[in-house]
Image (tube, rainbow, N blue to C red; front, side):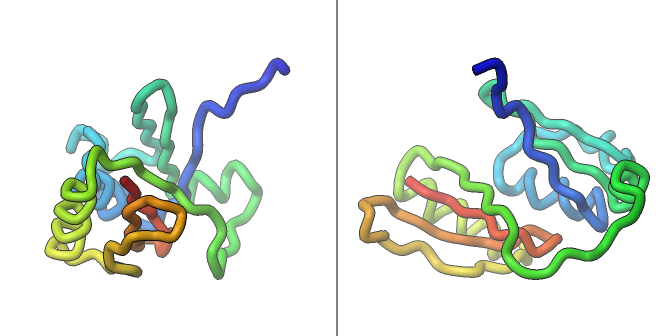
Length: 125
């Protein structure tokens, strides 16, 4: 086919706040990147990028604050227990738990949280 999904980018209001959330989620992101305008994290051959709104303005020519649900990021957890513990850790760290862990009808353990920019982040096992 000639193409491959390689990276998902997230536009953030506050780089440090966003990176701190994804660190709690388990991504390894050096603290030295907190002040950068663009940050990329690679995990299992896939990149997750973070750009400040200022960078987005430069790329797109303007920046309009989005509203509503746009994209869902879903992270696989090793087990139900890992999912439950991670959800609790995220909420204890002061982030919004959108939906507590539950056993979904499709057979997965599932939970949803908000990142600092309001994106829905799913956890599943």
